Image (cartoon, rainbow, N blue to C red; front, side, top):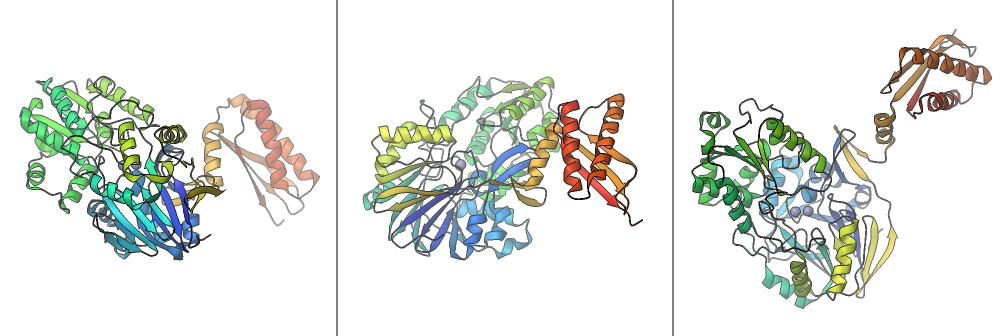
Length: 552
Ligand SMILES: [Zn+2]
Ligand SMILES: [Zn+2]
């Protein structure tokens, strides 16, 4: 499928009706670009990370002119390291996400082969038939941009993630002036972040968070403080350095991802003297234990309860040097990403059981602020861009439905509700859903990338809730069973006496199937074994039949 010269095709592959795995393709005049390629967190069935399904982009690989990255959050950038070898297209992004990506690429053999174009804001570039401008927007990570994509069939503006922050701390300025100019130039379709559309309250600023953290931290005179936040939230880290200085504490950074983020900043223009001094003054873990608790602030990742994070290791007592206990207070300067509630709760419970005091946004709601737009900000964006048509993106179904309604109430016309896999045509000022492609997600499973609807994942799901039963037997050349079938039951509780009975019934059933006819023997055995297990155990496990044939 390729778009014609007089049309634009918009094809979201992830991030619409689910949280994360953001990815949208835009097609025009026989060419494609991809916007973002992020991951979603999963944490079930031994799978931690999902990526968009790239079978379609791979099928039109020769027509893909570039992968454009709005910013360096994992839900926008995280799948590139897994999927780039299948796509092998040039990547366009601004300085900070480029530094993050380069760090990731160091771990791969093909890392040097990627053509990474560092682009400047306010500097439109031609990428195939698309003329693309990166427009600076504020968000909770450095270097976030919206994308203005001009073609001969019309212009699309993709906001990526953004917010309007009234304070002075978020250094990326919202390029309001450019947004207004872009709106005046005429935008055919606006694709806009829907994350906060269900929230009525004003979204505070990073400056408010700084005040709140000073207030809370100043309350503790004897205790050691740990602040957990996203590694990518550099402003939040700077706030912690600022507060530490103010209250006479020194900062230690625990965990690799935060150190890596600091290194990435060091490669960019954001590396100010102050930042350099801050990083230069951090304590090592060994130094932390020699300091009085009231003189230290630890900073670490793990705000989402991730099992491998620095905070989770501290909570489990697995950090070799630092142990948290009754002299510790942990502040969660973060939101709860939908789906992570239980993991976070579990880790907080673990901390509390170790004597640690936990402070989170449920009691101190201003120690974190969202990086996404409030309703007031959304209205401003509509007014700046003045789009002819509108598609809400970046949100689950509730958010997208609410955003469509809100945009209409705010005066936008020609709004369209889309989900991942929808093929949308923009032509002559109107949007039309042409078709829906069924798309699944891919799972990063060990070293493999496999579709979530693969048999192996389905089997794992069934095994995890219903167990596994295998029946193997030896069959002679004359189609007779030698000896008795060997039966193994895993993952289902069966008492010794029940196992004996089951073994007898299964053996009899298998022998009678063998006697009937040789055709489709394994399938027939599987079916009778399944029936026996369903009847006597009320379980539907994965059943495996192994027939070993002998020549004699
Ligand atoms: Zn995002
Ligand atoms: Zn983001």
